[in-house]
Structures are given as structure tokens and as C-alpha cells.
Image (cartoon, rainbow over all chains, first blue to last red):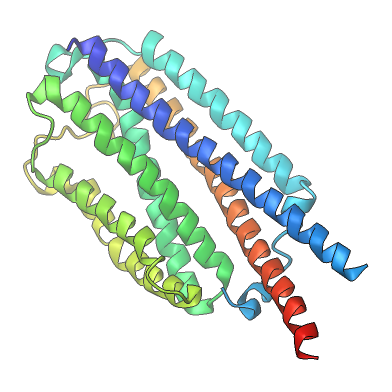
Length: 48
Length: 258
């Protein structure tokens, strides 16, 4: 592999690593927000 | 987590419900971090000059992402260390959450260090890996904090898991200065980078390279702060859901008993 190939490999690792982690955080956040909304609405319905 | 433990937190979900000043700060931090990161990439490829062929020539540009990633790992584990001590002293959940969040981010960045380092080493040293002091101690550091994340799942009781993890977070930090100073304490293949006290002499970097390096260092530090803010918010959200679930269970149990 050429030097440029190794450089591209390293950059891809950094972009995928950081980008992947950020995406995973947003997915976790969305999932939790939706779960909270459903629990809050159930709690409101039961209270009514 | 027990209901009492969750209830003892000071309105952990308010930041999520009303993204006020804290939300705006996180957003501003994110914009600053990503903008500087983009600038670092431009600097790394168009401002920094090609290094000596013995150091990999163009491949040396990996250095502008490899070293800041290592710095973020150190910073993250230092925060885990402080958070772990504070948690063991106070037993306040927010310290455990801070330590846990920081360790998780640290593991991500040290993983990048352990990937980008060998990619640079293969064409320059002729091998992906060498069991020298820097590489070995860095691998041990990574394994320690992967272990830190793993031990949290060993106990059903989150308070106990937090205590065990805190001990790992404190003991594991002993290795961090060893990793950093290993290139000076032992003979290693790993090059020693620039230092704040003596940035040019030790590394042979010139003005454009130092500009690129410090821009990347600030960008990665801001990125870490942004990620930590996001990750702790997710942790608080998880705690709130646990509290709501416990409340729902208790509402379901009380009518059945009466």
C-alpha cells in the first residue's frame, strides 16, 4: 500500500471512530427521549 | 439504581426539558469544536509541510490527529480519576456519571490512538506493532478502561458497580503518567512529540506544523468537552427514565395490594 493509502486509512479510522460515536450518542438520546415521552404520557393518563 | 438514589439527584431532567443556557452552551461548544476540527484538517493537509521521509513523509500528517487523540484520552481518564474520588467521598450519583461518561469517551479516543499509531508504524518501522514501553503501556491503559466500563455490568446494584468502577478509575490512572513519560524513562521506538516548554527543539517541528498541531489540540479538547456534555445528559436522561419506571411499577403495585 502507498503512503497515501495508509494516510487515507488512518483518516477513515478517525472520521468513522469519532463520527460513529457521535451518531451512537444521538441514537441513544433519541431512544431515551422517546421512552421518557411514553412513560410521562402514561403517567399523565393514569393520573387523569 | 434504587429509587432513593435517583430521587436524591437535584432535578436531573430539567436540562433536557428546557434546553436553556446549558443547551445553548453545548450547541456553541459543538459548533466551535467541529469548526476548529475542519480547520485542523485544512491545516494538516495544506499548511503543515511534508515531514522528513524517515518520519514517514506525508504519512506524518497522522500525527495531527494521533497526538490530540492521546491527549483527550489522558484528559478523559484524569476526569474519571477526579470523578471517582469525588464519588467515593460523597456517593453522589453526578460524580459517578461524570467519571463513567469521561471514561467511555477516553476509551473511544485511545482506541483511535491504537489504530492510527500502527497505521503510521507499518510503513515507517516495517511492523504494525512493537512491544516497546510506550505501545505496551498504552495498550494496558486501554485495557484498564475497557475493564472499567465492563465492571459496571458485573453488579446488579448500581451503587456497588459505581464503587467498584471508581476503584478501577483511581488505580488505573496510575498508568497514565507512565504512558506519557515512557518515551523518556525507557528506550523506545516511539518518537517524543513537542512539549509546551520546548515545542520546536524536541520535535523538529516548524511554525506551520506547530500552528496545525495546537489548532488540532484545541479542536480535540473542545470536541471532548462537547461529547462529555452530550454523554452526561444521556446519563441523566437514563436516570430519569429509571425513576419514572419505578414510579410506574409502584403505581401498578399499590392498587393490587389495596
